[in-house]
Length: 419
Image 1 (tube, rainbow, N blue to C red):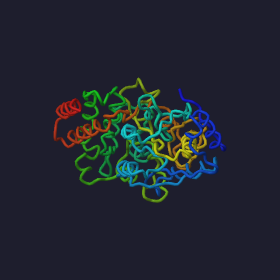
Image 2 (cartoon, rainbow, N blue to C red):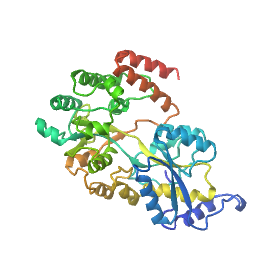
Image 3 (cartoon, rainbow, N blue to C red):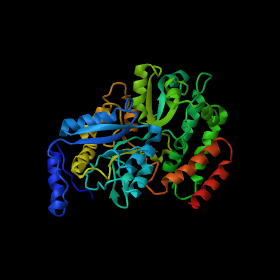
Image 4 (tube, rainbow, N blue to C red):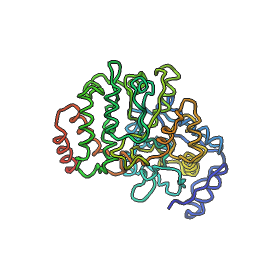
């Protein structure tokens, strides 16, 4: 059960009093802030990732407290951040870019227990930040994987749009029907999640089990599409390193399984001219069968905020208030207004998201965004990072045909058993 934490404009003073009442002797109490507090927050690619500044501005308007952004290289984010934390130079609020590293931060005693921060019912993904029954971060965004599709290419080929009831058989058939000399039927990026994420979520997979037979069906389908020329093969993609934004945005592929974060990017790139101008939408990701079409099963990890365990005690209340603000209807609506998928998907937030110019407003797109069972790609566990590395090798071995599916699965199982 989450305990209520102080909120609203006077949050700093109110929360300070609450915590002071629960602490020990007066000499052990942290010094209270007598005025507005300045917090630091880690982020990445700030010029193209506006969500951090949007939340910082909204929090200042609501509380008077300032949040200064600290930018890290996105490719080395966890490494650089860990080094700063080890040196005592880490920011006050730590953005959790990848859930699989949460246990690492917790084991290093680098995250504050924030179990007393209230998490609204409309917020999903919070369990990804629970370790041994304690909450070490809270989610502010929760992307889920959907199927983007180019309506113009579908129309030209006379193929009906995905209507929310598609299975993987329907997807395979559409990929074949949409492929021409000008474009592929679909594009699946090189990430292991583009196959394994769906297998884990839809086939009741357990990445810690060491038994990965459940991945066989989707790998067989992918290899068959590549062999038939309905999508670029993995080896060619690895050699040429195309971006998924370029493949879909420049109409080299008619379909693209991808996370909902791509909505904002595609709108922005069509506006700037980086992407072609065409009509598009998104639909639920195909399912194993029709038993889950009313609530499609997909995957995705949240992005969240934790607090540096070495934060100045006088700033703790304001930092917790920022975490609570980041999950509020107000903050979620601000995020939705720039095309971000917030962890809070209350009705008000849904309305704000689909009011954004450029976001598809058809019923299937709305259904795909708001109705789904999103299972974590990276279940929180001390072995998550190691297991995902092994499964990444499995992915490469299968798609480069270095090993058969059966052999790669067997070898991955043996490697996990040896952890």
